[in-house]
Length: 320
Image 1 (cartoon, rainbow, N blue to C red):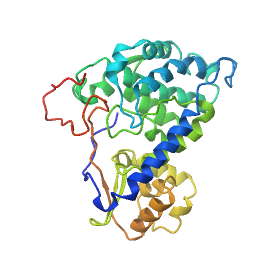
Image 2: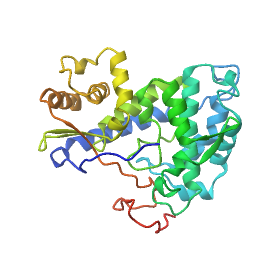
Image 3: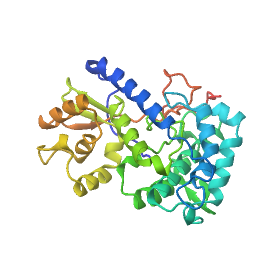
């Protein structure tokens, strides 16, 4: 579960020109790349059993029908055509890396499973609650993530347990934070194809690259002389710091002062040349890092872009 974020602004008018175009171009590139990562036909899995093809095929059909190019979800469609997503949830309820280890022989198979399980269960839970305008409206006190349980591999798990106790604790890869989608607008992009073991490295690299290409996640505010970053970079600062301690520095981070935050050093691994140079320059100049406000509005196609959910509002205005 993503806790509430820190302070931050909404826009950087000095960068309203080329950066959105750059991000849009990367979106198209990522979409093309991930569209090529289709499920393997039955019988072509890496292990003796078909882990990906059969298990993720219904999830892929549901995603392709309901997710648009901006990662907004047609939850009304998921409610009216529930079969595929329900089939995936039922499959996850009985099969997991613990119950069927032969189907998930590598860390890539296991991580792909848990990422898909998390994202699919979030979609299923939100589709089952028409009228909510934020994941936080499903149950009080972050209950969707902390208290609602789902059957996974024959045992009840919360979304928080899947994220923190399993994914974060077993897989030391901060890119998972750009792959888990909690159903809010400030979440990472939700792609119309599941994660697959054979393409997982490429998929995670694409997800991280796109994350830092978006203005909503990384801004160099020249007027405020500050580096503005997604709240994720603060919430999971220990994950990024641990990664930077355990790996050689990225070429773009070479020569940076020791006081430059690990979040900035990590971002330099995944930023394109232009943004990387701007980020490095801001870090060399000693600009502070501030966290952008997290938008918990539901990523629902039925909600207009002008609408922003606030925790102080009463739960009304059905989304469809």
